[in-house]
Amino acid sequence: MTRKPHPPGTLLLGQHFCLERCPHCETDRPTLELKATIGTRFRDFPTAWCFYSCNRCGGVVTGWGETWFDSGDRPNLIDVEARGFFPAGRSVSPLLPESARHYLVQAQQTLRQPDGCLALCANAVDAMLSEVGYPPVKDTSLFQRIETAAGDGALTRAMAEWAHTVRLVANDVRHPDLESSRPTAKDAARGVDFVEALGEYLFVLPSRVSMGLMSKPTDLPVGRATAGDTEDEPES
Ligand SMILES: [Zn+2]
Image 1 (spheres, rainbow, N blue to C red):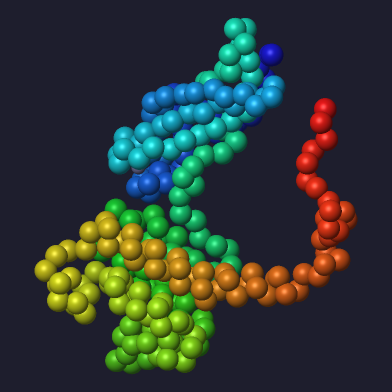
Image 2: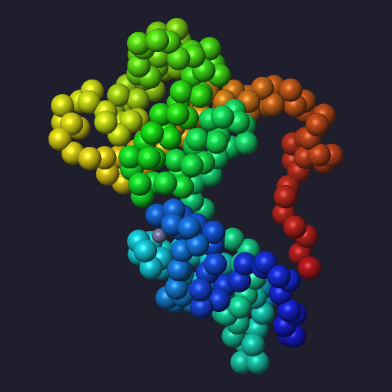
């Protein structure tokens, strides 16, 4: 099979995997070095699998792509166009309010700077609470607003309890056992995990439920609404 030139900007499975960000440590433009490759084939379709390691954190990223057989009937394993990779890393739903998205994106990008990351997490929570009717009130902490929202049923009790187990600000002194140390990357990751979940609960899930309620059976593609249909592709 003759190789076609790849268009500019194509993500390739080469000696390095040129991702914008490491899905493990969030480093910008990480150096992801090729460590191993394997080729598989299903029927007559060969697939290349490439395993990369991040020079910064050691995390492994697996990239894959449809490839071709070389002259020895082996799947070609290098300079293949990537069709996907995993882990995919963190992302921010477009269904979040603009202000919350603004802070959450930055928090995800600064996981290695815990103080700044946690301040951004707090800003994101502040933006989300304001959006659902709990704006800042003088002399009222973020956690008191979370408690009020939970008391009103806008948040679950479990969500409020989760909030109390994470450090949403770097100089958090709510818990004596957290006073003695500077926040770590783990604290930052826990903060971002909480903010992502809060966004899912307050905005993403309600939006998906609304969209589900609005879609009618007649919106389904023709041939998919009838029991007995199968998705098997015809044998060639
Ligand atoms: Zn990394």
